[in-house]
Image (cartoon, rainbow, N blue to C red; front, side, top):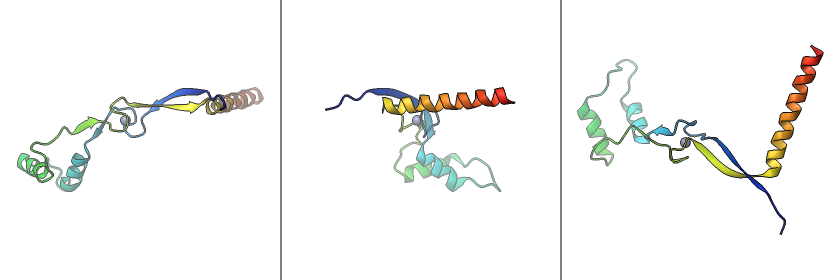
Length: 106
Ligand SMILES: [Zn+2]
């Protein structure tokens, strides 16, 4: 078995974009159902309660919930093979070199 090295890569969560929270999917559906450009008033409390009761909630849940993708951390960590990291560094160096050459030539 070959030895493989891994590096931990941390990047902003693609789902919440690092915000740590997302809108509860039922609230998104709620606003889609109730929001009207012509009449942008906030729905009555009774409409809100009725909507969520109809969807199985005794009370409306929090509108923002911890992001399920990153468990509210705002970032994702995963193992990547070191070869991927080396490629990333190589690409960066090439970009720096071409930038430097561009600066010298201009
Ligand atoms: Zn997230």
